[in-house]
Image (cartoon, rainbow, N blue to C red; front, side):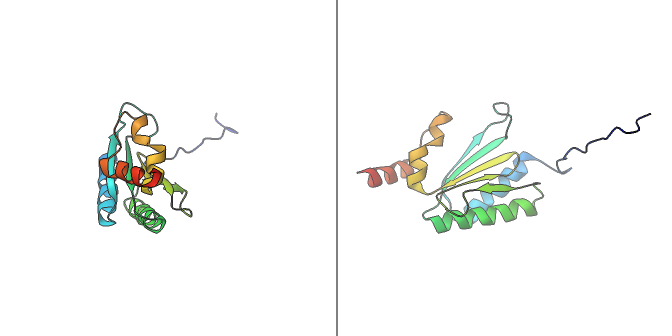
Length: 137
C-alpha cells in the first residue's frame, strides 16, 4: 500500500506547447513594438535552459519596458506557462523567461557593453556597434 506516501505533481507544459510557436509570438510582438537589431539564437541541443534565445534593442528605457510588458502579455495569452521578468522597472536590460524562449531586451548602450552575442560566437549588429562608438567616443 502507498499510505502515507505523498505524490508530487509535476508542472506540465501545455499540450500544444511548441517552442517554434512561442518564438513566432516573440518575433511578432517585437516587430509590432518596433524592436531593433533582433537576433534569434537557436539553442536546441546546445542548452538545457531554452530552445531559443532572442536579443533585441529598444531606443529608450520606456520602449524597452513597454516591449517587455507587451511581450509578457502575449506569451501568457499564448499559454506559455509561467512567464517571469527581471529588470522591468529599470528598463536598461530586461530578461524575460518565456520557458523555451528566453528574451533579452536592451537599450543599445547596455547591449553593446554586455555583448551577449559574442558569448555565443555571433557578431554584434552593425547598428548596435555604431551606437557604442557614439557613446564611447
